[in-house]
Picture 1 (cartoon, helix red, strand yellow):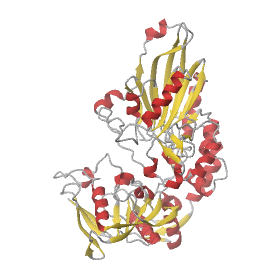
Picture 2 (tube, helix red, strand yellow; picture 1 turned 90 degrees about the vertical axis):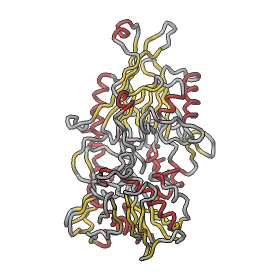
Picture 3 (tube, helix red, strand yellow; picture 1 turned 135 degrees about the horizontal axis):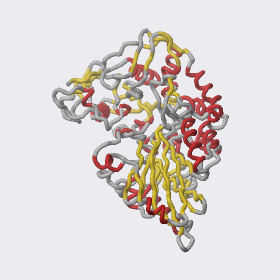
Picture 4 (spheres, one colour; picture 1 turned 30 degrees about the vertical axis):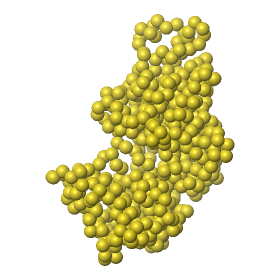
Length: 553
């Protein structure tokens, strides 16, 4: 899990997030002598999507690498020498790649197989590449016919980059340097053994070092930075990285503003679609997520009298994937064994439900679906209290037969279970932090209207094992009322066994009060699998919530 903030469509972003052409003019093209155009295509945050399908509903979806492949093939007809780069979070995210990575990892990684077929030039590992551990990551990396680039991911044993830091490609005589950077926030989200032996450096200084190498030693004509990072908030308001913020999660603007010599930045991580915007003369662009867009950037060069090449203009836009774009049949055929295997697993019947259940209001009231997660965490961890969130508002369990697909939709992340020791005071602090999901109270506005669009639902934790109220009329930080454990007000010093996921244990979502709590138990299995196993064993899904918490407004 990670925070994918809402991208504001007002202010400076609205004025800049348009198709941008820097320095370009028809007069220049007419007047130029020998000219070269270099096309750079980019995907990002594919999250295991090849087939244009929503695995949790079984319905068609206008996403995926098979549709992207059609756009890439069209572009190659116009420019056979184009560059194709992926910016990470690639091998995790759908039941298809989950089944491959956890249950049948012997065949070639399906994402690498498809990307090899499409002749990718490079990929930047994202934070979700680490979700299944280093063995799975290294296997997928070894199966790629293209390099994985990350200059700021360092092997502690050598002090050197664990991946190639950059790649130089020559296109019709023009030398293009491609520098890879990964968000340094991985230790805040991931289990330590999943990145054992690695260190993730602050990116501004690393970018400055390697851009200088590319310019002064590799003598490139342009620098492209492919990063698994993006932009937080409005570009006019974002603070650059500093010694006080050395591990900036999204440093795209800081790098553009502080590092000279960069021409194009391909962004990722925030799941935003950014056709083009300019900062300090640097062109920034981002291809959305799940293969719902393909970025096309063009760099225009003119040959100088010395024989070198000078970048004269650049442009970018994010092309949307839609129903009119057919999926590439060759890619579908290549990945079909993986797809069919996952579908058969998802269609396995494991239980029944007395009535239909859904998660649409799972962040506004106690629901049976969230209580199912809580029950599994409490029982598996023999815990006093459990924290869980609404991980998929579209989750739905039908009346009657329940399949693996239905349960998998409830918990869409590769989180594992921790049981930690905390105090009543820590639990209250966590619930107060969670209650910040709601904006300051305004008379007449409903809880749904007070939900903060900048905070994803997966960062609003609800508790089981205690009862309490969230009083939205009170100021944030003082909203939790009547917090009761086993029939008595919860004493601040009372010690509790708390069941949480690994993302929370590592402080993810701002739950710093839980980070580093003494670990009493860990489960090696994903919480999703624990829920599937529970339903398989118990057969019947509880259809009524216990209503242990409520919102007061």
